[in-house]
Length: 296
Ligand code: GLU
Image 1 (spheres, rainbow, N blue to C red):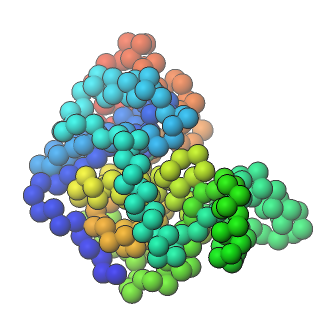
Image 2 (cartoon, rainbow, N blue to C red):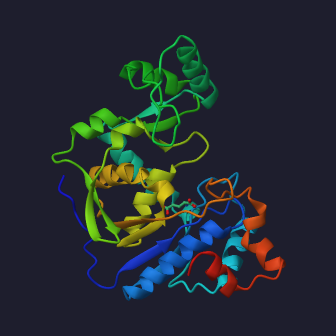
């Protein structure tokens, strides 16, 4: 499938897409500010997308906190807030397209079962392949099941996810995959290698979509032309390009920015309480001081 750029030739559209499963910290502020800076420079619009498909961890109270933090920081967003939890039907449609094309299969193994299998294999001296984030690839047991076996298991009502058959998916491509990355030296083509992720998850037994599936669906639905996000998602972009190609969705231009690190050189996480914007604010920091802390 040819690389199709976003056809929206009007104003560039950017988005900041936090998950409200905790309060925002300095890393989020950096990402929101980087989006704001680039959207302004391009004369574009900046949208706010709340990525709340994880209904157990994302709560209305946390979402309120996220919006409050962004308002306090002084980031102006265009248009209404887009909430992923209001778009589950769209993700289901995308998933169904992949199921119909036999590119997605029901995956029955629980996290515990995968862990046990990987542990046993590693204990016997074998190396289990891992994805770019270090997580073990999903075993091929469910992919290899016959149609009848799948139907029988589904008929028992067994809980299951859906996963992409990576090998089959790559077989359908007519040209090598790449994405456009905006760097200090201009826009460059980055070869995408989604196979390193194995059979990625498309929906979970407890959530009707996955991060990868919803992010590509929404970037297309919202007409996003520029995705600006942290380097931690750099390699995941290969998966996003693959899903865009499979689903016939346009490809935004990407920019992956530096991450805020803690004193030990690790990426900030929601458990780093002392870098939470609410905490810094309670201790007297001003929005201008936060901008400085983030290098703006
Ligand atoms: N929701 C993701 C996060 O909070 C960001 C997703 C993205 O920008 O693609 O890390």
